[in-house]
Length: 370
Ligand code: SAH
Ligand code: SF4
Image (cartoon, rainbow, N blue to C red; front, side, top):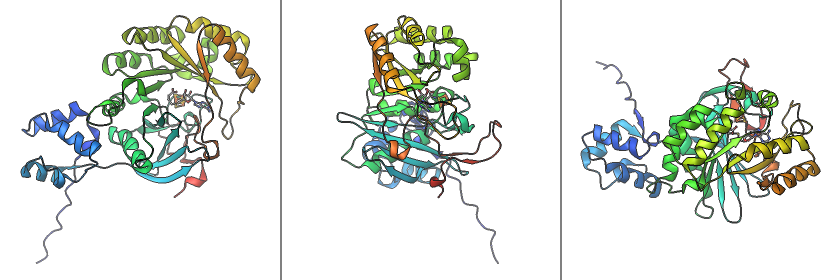
């Protein structure tokens, strides 16, 4: 007699979804001591061991429970690109035909990983290629910390990730819990041990979540400003209609008070004839005087069908000089990885839009089809 097929048991927990606190709660729930959390973090992030059977300081019954009910799964890289300047870009599969991108930018004294937080972005900033694709879903904590894991694996021992910026695809503060848990792991001494100065979250200004962040997680903050009047910012960064400049700057001041010795980095994309006049520079000086700030001018990265162009070098330099002369430390972001489209605003992947702003699956770069 043929017996009925036994259903394959679903392994329910991806243990990369938990930070130390989450793991401690998980182990206590199993009747184990909370210190199992640090032991597991060490196995995964320091020893690179993901086979529960090799975790020798766990009892046999615990190993067998983990083996039966849990897994440690990183996202899958489907394409790797290496630029002439050493910048590397990975296209990462996130299921259902969706892809995100992760970028490593090597410099003399550091290696910065630019990590994605969502598949697409719902905020629809008009100068941003990700924002033009619509939104599909939030990434899990495992998919966010997994980008750091797979990137470090690909880089090997020679190049180390010393800094992480949440500046890839998506608005990290709209995926709050998963992003905070992943950043906790980046800073945990038993995982990646990066200092809070080396982990930066970038936001277009989700004000309530900025307040929440000051309570939940002490990391460096970057704010995408891009305009100094509500009229123009409403157009470029539509979330400004909900949280206008006055509210945004108030949230920045509160954040600066919590971390007194740290400055907030303001990002400002240079759009030819749109936000790059002397008037704009003067407005910016006035706005930034109320917060300890650094300014990062980002040359606009064009993408197909955009209506914008980048300000000229002369204009960018004039802007920079005016700001520096007013005492605001201002730098111009050096374009990196241009030959592999690895710059800000060019992280596109492939997104099936669920926000109904667009109706079809968009393969923005055909070369990514696998
Ligand atoms: N959603 C977050 C983080 C991801 S975007 C945010 O908006 O801050 C990371 C940075 O790239 C932001 O400062 C964003 O404004 C900038 N950016 C987006 N599109 C760009 C483009 N086409 N050229 C230059 N910078 C761009
Ligand atoms: Fe989203 Fe940031 Fe792009 Fe705006 S700039 S659409 S918030 S990813």
